Image 1 (cartoon, rainbow, N blue to C red):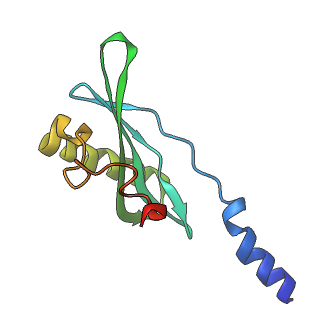
Image 2 (cartoon, rainbow, N blue to C red):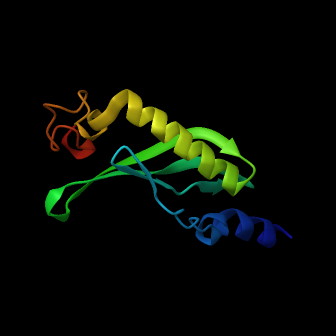
Image 3 (tube, rainbow, N blue to C red):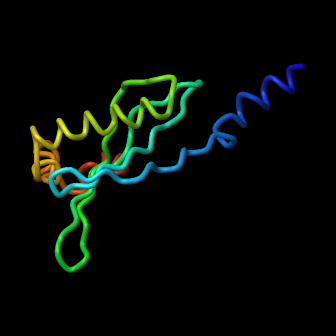
Length: 114
């Protein structure tokens, strides 16, 4: 009995699969791609915002929220709605370096260097 319990606990993450990404939704030149994470029978709002550039280069921003919904379709719809609002509020600023990280070097933020 304990073996079954522990194997379920320790193998839960390895058995979890990342849901397939939804079809991209175009909005003001951006592509919104919902890819919610399944957690305990719920879907957490998560995905990508892409901004295609010239020469085939694409800027990409990981978009995650704490909202969880019981259905995949509802989660995809909420992801698109929240991403559209985020695009309207932030625009291309989402691709800029976080001001808290400007001026910090990778060596300075390394736990081994402290």
